Image (cartoon, rainbow, N blue to C red):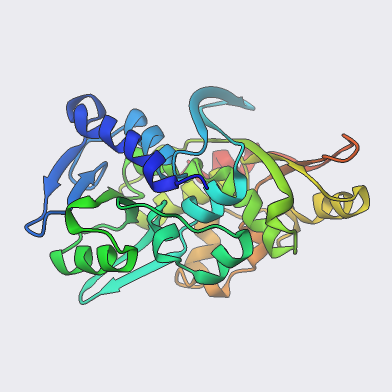
Length: 316
């Protein structure tokens, strides 16, 4: 079986070999684990963000930078594809590991989850388990992990401390905004999973989303990042499923099914004090989706990019 962590280590080595090019900061904790900062104290940038996205996907996907016109709004755009959608997106990129050790908290994604089986039910669903003596995790936080946190992660992954690599990212950094937009295909698959699709039937996935400029306010930055996906994200999947099922899913997948659709994410989040459990889950979906029937080749599409909300999102 493909090892996402071993595949990812090749990408990590590229970062470690040329930190100045990627504008990152590399640090060894006293325990021996490696911190790779892409945007907390480091300058980071587009290149660091693209590499972070690849690493978050366990190295099992392709990521590139493009540029698009959103009805007069010119924005850089990330394009993501994968031939291993269940493994790369749910087995790695999904932020499914809530880490809380003493005073340190972070949202964990990346291939290390496949070693720790966080959460276990996801890996049972996609029938994947990694086997590797090295682990890489992406930590979304505004603080560096402690020795205690590193020990917890390494023990959960059953790897030696000096074989643990921790990438740090924040929403207020350019690299952070790139890697959030880079979750566009994962967002589409997440919505399909909520609607009951068998993830193992999804053969290929591709998508693109605008990369919004970062904001110094973390709440507004998060709002912009989510708007890029909710109102600007476009996804396409080839699925080994019946046409009637895919026709129904194509209608129900886009974010326009959310009762709060048409308002910026920051407005919606602010009303519930950023408690995401109080938000209609249909919001966490791409703007548009295309589902291709692997059995017949028939195509089902629904949804549209909302350029007005993208512009509104950048006005504050």
